[in-house]
Each structure stands twice: as C-alpha cells, then as structure tokens.
Amino acid sequence: MKKLIFFLLAFLSIKATNAQGNFENLTTKLDSTGKDYFKGYAGIAGFNTFSTFGATFVNRNDTSAFGDSWSGWAISRLKDSISIAYDTNDCAAIPATGYGGSSVYATAYLSYLPEENKIRFQNVQLGVMGFFITNSTIAYRSMQNGDMFAKKFGGVSGNDPDFFRIIIKGWNNGVMVPDSIVHYLADFRDSNNANDYIVKDWQYVNLGNKFNDSIIYRLESSDTNAWGMNTPSFFCIDNILYQPESVSAFNTQTDIQIYPNPCIDELVLNNKSPESLTFTILQLDGKLVTHATIPSMQLQHLDTKTWGAGIYIVHVKSSTREYYYKIVK
Image (cartoon, rainbow, N blue to C red):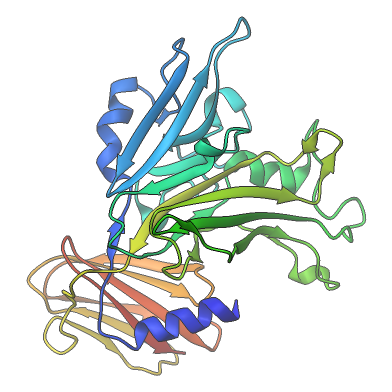
C-alpha cells in the first residue's frame, strides 16, 4: 500500500501521460468464435497467441474424450458475476465488466507450463508501469462460499487467516529482476475480521517500470492440499500502462477543470475540450470510486458526501490523451 501511494503521488507530481494497452481491439477475435470469450478453438488442441498494444499472451487448448480444457490466457467480455459454471463462465470477471466499464479484458488460468503464465512486451523501450487486476467470478464465489474442492475463506468461525495472492517477477533488458511484486486478491489475515476482504473491483498493480521484457506470475493460497492449491486459479487483468515516450497531456486551464480542490460535499468535472472525455476516480489503492463520460463543453456535479477523507486520483482520458489529477476530500 505505501509503495503504491508513493508511486501515485510521484507520478502525479510530473505533467506526463502514459500509453495504455487495453483489449478492446480484440473484439473481432471474439466475434469470430460466436461467443463472449476466446479460450482456444473448440476441438483443436494446440497453442494460440494474441497481442494487444505490444503485449503478447499465450493460450493452450487441450482436447480429450471428456471435452476441451484450456490454460494460459483468454479474452473475455462475459458479464456474469454469479454463475460458477466452468464450461461457460470460467473467463468472467467478478465486476461484470472490464476496467472503467470497458467491454473486453483478459483472464488468466494458471498453467504448469511457465510460458503460459507470462506476458511478453515488444515495446521494450517503454517501461511497463502496471495494470489493473480483479478476481474472476469463479474464484470470488469459491472464496466467498466454498465449493466441492475449496473452503470458504475465513472458515466456519470467520477467523481462519486465509489469503489468495499473485506474485509477479520479470525481466528487464534480458536480465531477471530480483524484486517481486505481491498483490492480494483476498486477505483474511488481520486479527480484526472487519478488515477481511475478497477483491471485487478493479485494483491497480504497480510494477514501477521494473520490467520491460516480460513478466511471469504465480498464485498462492492458504487453501492447499498435497496436490496444490484448492482455490480456483483464475484472475482477470485490463489496461496495461506504459511509460510514455512523449507527453501529450491536457491543459488544465483550457481543456479541463476539476474543482473545488479540496472538496467537501461536491466535485465538479468540467470538460472544456472539443472532444468527449472519460473521467475515472480512484482511491489510492486503485479501487474504483466512479467514472463518467462527459461530452464536449459540458460539466457534471458529483456528490462526494459519502466519500472518506483523503486523496483521490482523477484519470481523464480521450481517444489520444490522458492525464492524472490529484484531489483531496
């Protein structure tokens, strides 16, 4: 948490924007399958790859008499946050949408083959700043309620110190970086049960420009047996952020106005630019507060009475530009 807060504050201290790699350009691949997910070609065993904005992902589909199975990465626009059906909803994200309300995101299913657990970056001149992550529907519901293989997190008493986390390592200029990034997708280790949580929204994972070749992940859970992890080994990601080569930020005097700052009961988002803008407001831990698309030359009033006191991030985005703005409640 402290590292993320430091990163965001440092990032906001410079007038820069970043390149962003989402998965919206892969809709045609989904359309070609006739489904709202791509996790391999039905009945065809083998490896598949897909790329978006310089990031490449590997998918593997296996066939057997019992049907197809997959591992690695999949593309999804599923919106089902309830179903735990592995055959039709194993690619669904628990928020029922991509980050910021987008349609398409990626789902990971842990593989025993390391190559399938990687993301490779082609634009090695760009530092990889981070990405947004959330639980899959199946993993979330398993931790929330338990299932035939995995326990309910917290146990019967609610006091079991359970956790589900991702550990990320990577390479920079061909050399593995010794640092690891750890992000908890569920954490029940606090002695106060009121602080227990299972991630249900999109949260930011700060990679801190440590890796520009590739990253690899592994998953760990408190719920294991002799054969490995019982917690379903899925998660979802969206919006990979890259360090920019050049800056193309908004002019905060002529393009946008965000006021008052600090705010108490209300925040005004004023789009004075000639194009439609999307405003996304985040807590410092990456949790989504709200987002709105505001047409050119219009403004929107946000009720902030229920917001907790502290620092928030306003992410302003058009089709070609981005800006991060700090506000205080």
